[in-house]
Length: 395
Image 1: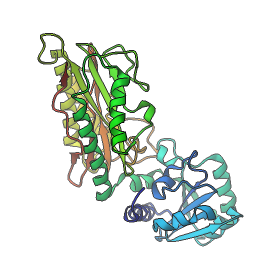
Image 2 (image 1 turned 45 degrees about the horizontal axis):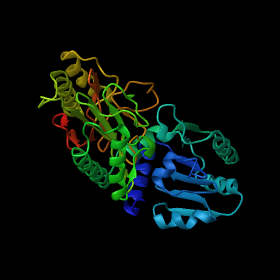
Image 3 (image 1 turned 60 degrees about the horizontal axis):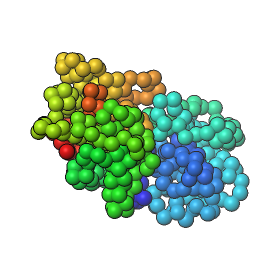
Image 4 (image 1 turned 180 degrees about the horizontal axis):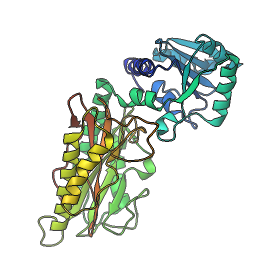
């Protein structure tokens, strides 16, 4: 899925983060990951392992993968970890032996987190297993959540990763452009979904969230704004806003965008003032958030700047702007502008973070949303998507 250099850079970010937070060891456990995914393991070594697997990463710049004999060749092929330990039995003996190398560890990170799903892959069973192994090493130190380490590893994307995301996003932009000739009065939400999915099939690509609800489609005020299953019995009519929320995935990099279409009524050559005003407010709010976003800025500052636009134009404030994006549409970690229980997680923006910005307004014609993808740069923030300039008109 990913090249050796990209995986190596991810592990280098892990070593650096462990040194930054003075954490001796980060332990990641997984098994049967085709149906019990471990987010950190998937990101650092995207193998669908079968027997028990452990990835042990240290601040000294070493990484050891303890893996079943059936999976060892795949892990070795990646060429990213320092050492691969293959086993056929007694997994806990092998894990204990590896952990003994790093005695006396004072601080160990495990994947549990109330606020970051990308750092919460440790099951209770696996927790008990790792604790048995640590007891055998006579570990007396501190256990911490790996969420801030994972923030550095997953969120601070390399230029190569950002380029991969941007290629996917621009391909999605082309699909949206082609949809302008398809979306019209009389099509159903399911018709629109099938159109987008046919383009994904032509590209031999994938989806950045499950196909069943990708894209989400809302039509006018007659279909659910959540639209996990676009309606087969709701047809676009003149005067409807149509909102399409689509996520593409190519070579392991995702996109997530929304575009709004308006179905012209007889005699109309533009959208109604209500629709145009709402769109201009959304567009201005996103631009204001992009202008203020930069490394070191607390994430809620972007939301507050967008809300200044909304409130000044008579619209309700939004609770959040979007979410991290990368290998999937929803990457976990820091939200763009959302306020939630975050004592555990550092929520300052950093170079290399990729976010969606997607404020929405509900109008009498339906849901209007513009969703753009942006990246935090050394000096600020830039668009990865091609911003929608106006509501797209269809007949």
